[in-house]
Length: 95
Image 1 (cartoon, rainbow, N blue to C red):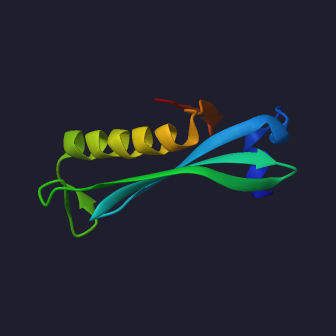
Image 2 (image 1 turned 45 degrees about the vertical axis):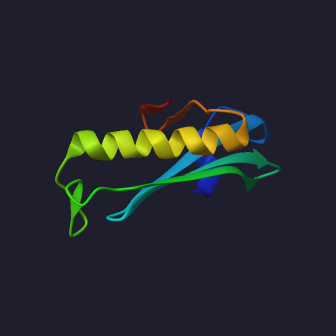
């Protein structure tokens, strides 16, 4: 199974998707466009986590972490000019 096989049933060339990395210090987002089986980053964002949001890689304030992820995604979407909506592994990823 290839990386982009998760878009089963859709043309890979016409897709945009989101990558989200929730770290202890930052929530980071990438928005990328897929063309000819290759991903091209078109937007990036990050938001600093508060000390009370994460401790040692574990979530301690889920509400704060969700807000940080949303801010990170909004910054990436502003840069990209698009907010992708995509079905991945049975759950809807959207703004």
